[in-house]
Image (cartoon, rainbow, N blue to C red; front, side, top):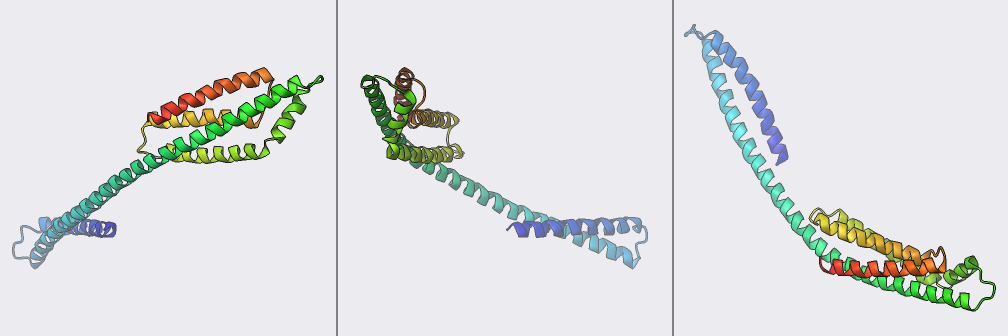
Length: 217
């Protein structure tokens, strides 16, 4: 259909040029009524004018059909995006809840092991204790890292969906970032035991708050 529009646009342009040429010739020789070339110029001028009108009408109708088809396609894509967002939002909430629980559980366990190490050691070394704790949970850490990546991909998919409200995107992205921070807290232990405990409590509360916000979307 677009080729048809282009074709008749070209026909219109050619007819327009021809009409100008023969129109000028007709105008210049209009006083000589018996001149055969005058009649020919007049004839070709009107033919060119008719071709211009017809090509313009056909091109307009074809363009209208294209616009209508594009509008229909845009509406269908919008509906598809809305449907995708509904599914993606549900997946995000499910993955967020699962990941949040795993991170909370790991962080609690690490905190307990850290506390036990402090209580049971006369010569406590933070760096050594942290290395031991994390080596005890290699599988959990790998699983959490993988799930964080999955949640990131889902977050990005939602951010690129034009049918999602800006406020919803911000809520989802903020939830992802805070949970990612919580996951990093559990998979890359740093600081003192007190810092670790305080950060756990803060991030755990943020995760719970975000879950409520997500469920209200």
